[in-house]
Length: 157
Image (cartoon, rainbow, N blue to C red):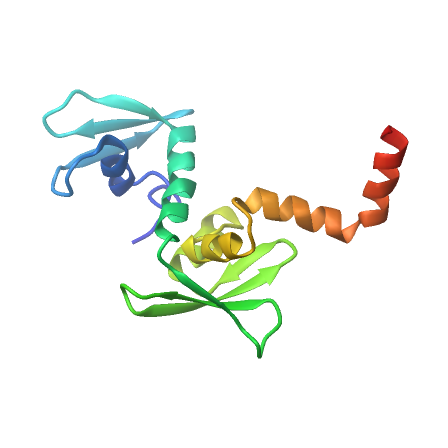
C-alpha cells in the first residue's frame, strides 16, 4: 500500500541509491531533514530527504526514456503514452498548471503532494522539448502574460 511516507522514502529507492539487490532487508525512519536507513549487514546511515526527492524525479525521468508519445487528434492538448515493454498506455492531458495522467503513480502524487509528474508526464515534456516540469510551468507563466514580461524587459533595458 502506498503511503505519504513510502511514495518518496521507499526501500526500493534506497536499493537504487546504494546499488543493492532486491532481496536485502531495509528499515527506514524519518527525521527532520534526513531518513535513517538500516540495511541488514551494514551500519545504519542517514540519507538526506533532498537526495530522495532528487532521486524521485530522476528515476521517473529515466523510466520515461522508452515510452512512446502520440499526440491525440481527437482531444486538444492530450497525448497517449505507451510503454511497449509492459504493453500499457495512459492518457496525459497538458494543462497550464502541469500535466494530468491516468496512471496510479500520478494519482498517488496528487493525493499526497497535491501535484506531481509521473514518467508519462516526463515523456510528454521531452516530446515538447523541455527537460523539467519547472521549465514547463515557467513557459506557461510567460505565455499567459506576454505583455507584462515584455514591459518588464523594456523597462529593465
